[in-house]
Image (tube, rainbow over all chains, first blue to last red; front, side, top):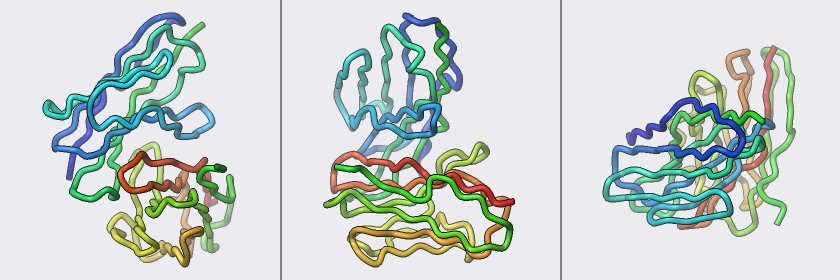
Length: 111
Length: 112
């Protein structure tokens, strides 16, 4: 099956710093999402981004499908950004099918 | 839109008891997924349905686990009998063809 690797595994920042999280995947995908799992355990969808670039406030994401990677940018980080960030991908020719998750990046933002 | 609704939020049960987790998908979402999250194994897919039909149950760990989707608005995941190693957070997620997946808030299961 497809392999999804995220880096770095852990990241510690001071409030206000910027960061880049990376997701590499081993095969062609037809769906890629970034999720934030907050300290209460909820999985919040950040971006649905199988290709291209999107921005939402301080967050943006870019997926280069031909090179099999995606990047999540967090600017001017806040303590509420702390949690685990997951990249998840779907392969195959259907519009449904399972998402395969990476192991996540644990982000801690200190005040 | 109330999102994907899971119940209960927390469940504590004794080893050997039957546990039933419930999920109400977003209206119009025709695919439903059950995931399990543990520290050791991360997020892993147990089973998924499309148009109420089970498509892939290869992630179901053993015969003690079963899932049903009797109609488009309800699904259950049952563990019978439960064991301490089943302790995890169980997520339900739904998807409408070609779009992003939405996850419920999860059920934290503790088997003692």
